Structure formats: structure tokens, C-alpha cells
Image 1 (cartoon, rainbow, N blue to C red):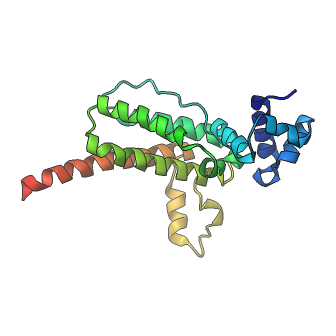
Image 2 (cartoon, rainbow, N blue to C red):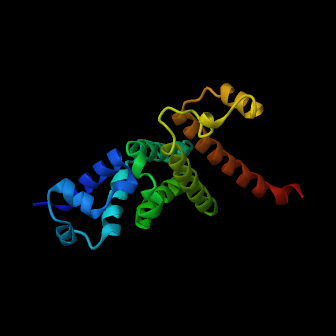
Image 3 (cartoon, one colour):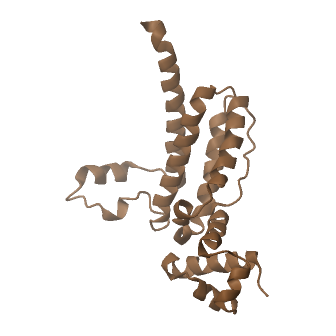
Amino acid sequence: MINRDAAVQASLEIIDTEGLDAFSLPRLAEQLGVRAPSLYHHFRDKHELLAEVALRVAGPSRRPRVKPGPDWPDYLIGISLNFRQSVLRHRNAAPLLVTHLPRVRFVSVQEDCASFLSASGVPTELQVRILEGVQSLVVGAVLMEASQPPHSRSSAAGHVSPDTQPHLSRALSANHLTPRRLFETRLRDFLYGAVRDHAGAADEPTRR
């Protein structure tokens, strides 16, 4: 007998070890020791199954232990780091975040974050800019990192020659941030930049 959880776990194991292109319902049935048609007792189709796999790759939405207030960026960064860590455990499955992850997963996280931002005194008119910006940065950065070999300090590092790309080569050599720290710094720069830009725009009429 099989169940949904066992099918999702087996699917993820196939993708982790053999790659996303190797996954199919017949391959999954072989892994589970069942006939492929029996999978349709648990999932409507392959898309529904892969949506469940994508949810598992994204991991649970764990709330950081940060109280509402001036340190609110740490809350968003904590959620983002948890997401990154979960996805990088399953690099081969990372593309499913774009093709199969149910939108409701992002909506529920964004609702939680919007509530936290409101409690922290972040202006309501700035919140969508923050939430959408963080989502785009995080998903894009994690997908890019997942496509690279582990421990690479840059997505370009393995393709740069000092002879043909001297400026980029020097910049890469001068970067001493780990991938995790670079990810965190990128988010922090965006968040504080958005706040400064919003404050500057609010002050603009006063300066005129």
C-alpha cells in the first residue's frame, strides 16, 4: 500500500538523485513497487503530485523569534534564510518552485509578513513594495544558487577568466562573503534602501 506522503517522498528522492528530467509517473511507480495507474488513486495528475513535491522543497514557514519593532528586517530575512536552506537541500527540484509551487504558499507567508510589518509600524503603502521585492529577490537568488555547484561564491565564478574578464575577476577575488552572507546582505541592502527611498520621497514636498 502507498499513500500521498510516501509518493511525495519517493518523488523527491528520485529528483534528488537522478534529476528532474528523469522523473515520471512510471519511474515513481517502479520506485514504489506499484503499477503507475494506482498513483491516480492519490493524485489527479502529475501536476498535483509535483505541487506537493514543491511544497515540501519550500519547507515549512517557520517564524523567526523576532518581536515587532525597529528590527523588523530581521524577521523577513529569517524567513528568507529558512526558505533558502530548505530549497538548497534539494537543488535538482528547485525549478518546481516556479512551475508548480501553489500561489497560496506565497500568499499565506505574505499575509503573515504584512501583519508583522503593520505591528512594526512600517507604512502600509510601503508594504507591497517590500513584500513583492523580497519575494522576487529570494526566489531568483535561490534558484540561481541552486543551479550552481555547492560552495560557489558567485554564479559567475566558474566562468570568469582574468584574461578576458579582468574587472569581474578582481571583483570576485575581493568578495569574501559566503553565499549565505551574500544572500542576507543583498536582502538587507534592499530593505533598508526601500525604507530610505520611501522616507526621502515623503520629505520631497517639504524641500520644495
